[in-house]
Image (cartoon, rainbow, N blue to C red; front, side, top):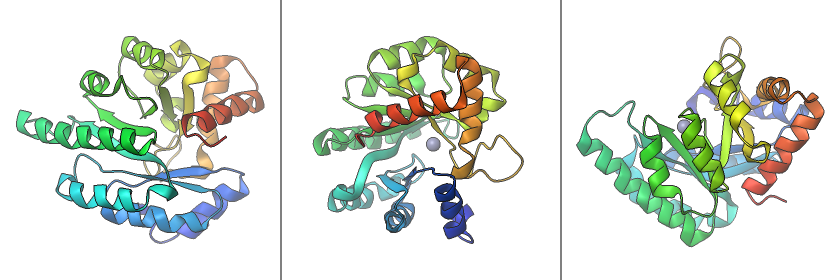
Length: 233
Ligand SMILES: [Zn+2]
């Protein structure tokens, strides 16, 4: 993310000092390359993807993923974003690229990290048969989340759960074994300013209150779920 161009090393050191490992997701060719560079740090894992707003790079990114598949724990973020695209023609283009990357994740045997905004039902129809999937920052309905977790797919909860009653309700209704956490850095901070991986504990605190458990017990469930979601065990 360009938001970290000035102090990337310090941000990763802070996460490392807080004993936090992170999965960095690329969204275009440049950020996939930056993600790969970050693998020099012991606490970083890579996911390579394509955002619905860089579709002109889809061939290049697919090629990059095929060449670097051994260094990835997932394909993503990929998905649909109808919040920022309002025309049916754009939706069709997004869906076409998304199908490509869904197929790629199956072929390469990697979990899919899904970006979905205002397109949750359509995304679900496309991925419900996929073996392994993580819905990053899911903010859709509780009913659909039930269907998602019934497929064995994961609900990744962003730090904004601290202030979002909707996300709190979703966590409350979801099976514990389907929940993982993320920051979506540099976005969605629970505090003022830029978000960063070292702040993921904010989401853990919010979830521990909902589950009525200690921070430590909550964290250990979330870590175990993350290991399963990304085959890290
Ligand atoms: Zn996203």
